[in-house]
Image: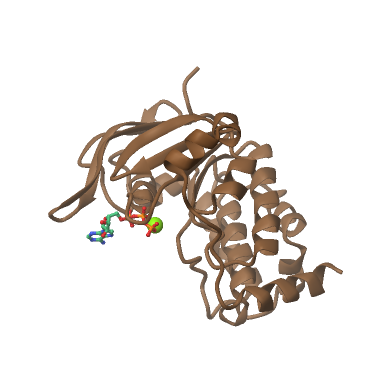
Amino acid sequence: MSSLLEIREVNSGYVGVQVLWDLSLSVEAGSLCCVLGPNGAGKTTLARTITGAIPAWSGDVMLDGSSISRATPEARARIGVAQVPQGRRVFADMTVEENLEVARFAARGREDPTSLPFVYELFPKLKHLGGQQAGRLSGGEQQMLAVGRSLMTEPRLLVMDEPSLGLAPLLVGMLYEAIARIRDRGVAVLLIEQVVEAALGVADTVAVLESGRVAAYGPASEFRDSEALKSAYLGGGVATNGDAERQSSEILGDQS
Ligand SMILES: Nc1ncnc2c1ncn2[C@@H]1O[C@H](COP(=O)(O)OP(=O)(O)OP(=O)(O)O)[C@@H](O)[C@H]1O
Ligand SMILES: [Mg+2]
């Protein structure tokens, strides 16, 4: 059986800086692979190489058995490679609804009428906020919208770059429930994280990146059960920021 995403010995980086070194990794259809690793390990660079924001210098990025290494980011999006970028970018001047509708464009020809209801089922708050300007939403709400937008593109592979960054623990829990349901819908998820415990809880497989190389790879259960593996590779803590309490009370207010 071939993987939905297969990265074969990829070298990649920026002008004058190699970041990824002979990196190989695969993600099965409908499974969730969590990529962990310290700051600067190359996680975002890996995400960019998969989505096409930067090219692979050598090696191959394969989707469902076909090389997409030379496809533009737009072409990759059209065949189902979606991302939630680090820093949750949304169109600030558009409403929530408009943000979702515009995202649907990437899926033209493959639209699924159940996607919007699925987004609203995952994040009921977005439905209530439909007419609001996205730039005025809280950080947590913008992250829900960023995830919602990615789902409107009908992804087969969803690359999420530290989606929990800056969210309160309660929101992280909600987000992770949503991510698990996205995987259960059949989407392959490559989840980049530094919040180790939460990520291990939902992952099927784990890859630890160090200095642009895969330092450890295996079933998530092995990492969950092994203190030795955790302390060897996964020293990270939970990220929160000053907005945390405000965000969690907003969300709680909505859920009650
Ligand atoms: N646009 C760029 N131009 C040049 N070098 C870059 C660029 N973006 C990142 N780098 C370098 O590439 C290396 C890997 O960065 P990358 O952003 O992929 O790490 P990361 O694992 O995502 O880190 P973080 O956890 O902080 O998000 C770092 O040394 C970084 O300085
Ligand atoms: Mg990063």
